Length: 66
Length: 157
Image (cartoon, rainbow over all chains, first blue to last red; front, side):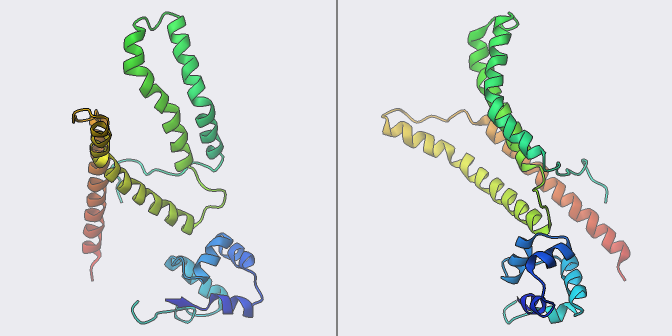
């Protein structure tokens, strides 16, 4: 699975720290999600997509083999 | 869902400091306690005390200190931290099982190297504790699974 968080974050001119604060998680968690080291919970994915004004499917994209 | 035992909640972050404190001062404190017990005459059979009690007593501050470290929140606690802690516990239990089961092997390998005969080390307590942990974990898991399935069956459309 890949995600477009880094791109969407850049569009909103947000730092990882700011996004983390808005979502109530740590900056390390945002970093790990962006780098595909950690898969967020449904709740966090929904919160994130809400914040960017996108659907979860637009933010997180399934890849072949997932 | 009904729980067999109350759910364990993590302690606030400050308990990590208490854990470190217990680890640092715990062992000297236990030594002082031992000396005080002997000095006050509460413990008279010191030979038995030192063979039966003193060694396990040393583990108490270590175990309590480590438990406080393990069961207290991080400074910044979120779902990834919880996920990593869960993984660490899973790995910890797994390697503990392997380690304890392999202990007689290593113990006897050293004995054979020293030219001694093979014997079973005294690990009955460890095996018992491990067995209880695994029985509880599996029992609790099966129970939760059963309760969840039952609730879902009732709600099935």
